[in-house]
Image (cartoon, rainbow over all chains, first blue to last red; front, side, top):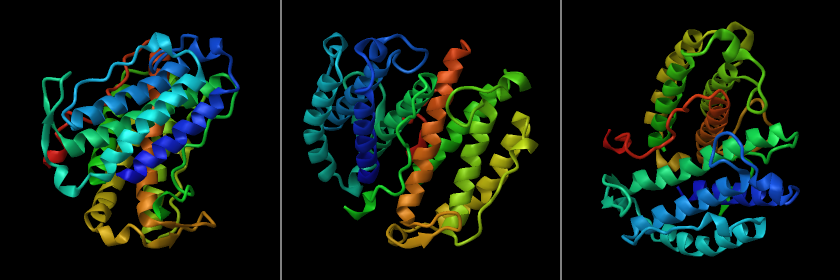
Amino acid sequence: MQVLFQYNWQVRNNWLKWCEQLSEEELLVERKGGVGNILHTLLHIIDVEYSWIRGLKGESDYEVDFSEYKTVESVKSLSDSLQIEIKQYLESWSNEMEYENVKVSWNEEEYMKGEILRHIIAHEIHHIGQLSVWSRELGLRPVSANLIGRGLMNK
Amino acid sequence: MQVLFQYNWQVRNNWLKWCEQLSEEELLVERKGGVGNILHTLLHIIDVEYSWIRGLKGESDYEVDFSEYKTVESVKSLSDSLQIEIKQYLESWSNEMEYENVKVSWNEEEYMKGEILRHIIAHEIHHIGQLSVWSRELGLRPVSANLIGRGLMNK
């Protein structure tokens, strides 16, 4: 599971780098699907990942004020800072936790911890797929989504 | 890992059902990104998944003639039939296989089996994200990408 998180973080950083070629207007202009624009789709990925990790730890929801994030740098900075805590949590993960039930503050249902971890992974990959269409619509080459060849299993 | 395959197959079937509301023209009209149209993006997912599974088993590449697939039924039928063999392979999977090296016929590189399995998973989720943008562009509600709440861990 950690390999898939590492994959997501590499791809996310590639996309944040890709964003640097766009103007603030292009990053924030309304588009169909996703969270409505490029930068806030990336911000949403970060927000959702961290909120669920907090939920897994029995902590309260984390709310991001989207209006505060209008630059790639600000989003990258948030991503980097939150990953420290997320990495610590993933390093403490063990197979016995897979089927442990947990209830998070913003949802009535009870889920298994392993289910939430996979939800976070799939959530990011899904939104990244959306960015790739917007990229083609802009006439730009999207970031590679390939997982093979990144040496992720060697770590 | 099997949970993520189950997730992908549920979501894929939901999208194939979703496709039934579209005409053949809408399914095959050229769009930006993905594999260029809705139906062949789904077919590509199936093709890639099965080819890699064959590669993992040391078998030759599987080539799909895309021109033969112009209806949702034909794509669904292929998906269902190939899943039988894929399920058997996944049921034979063990943790020791994660770091085993394998070379597939269509690629010069050697990869670890666990890396390929994760590549297949991420590949499908990524393309499904693309479908969700095209869906919104058509003014249609996309299939849910949520992994939680599907009871996938109970099986």
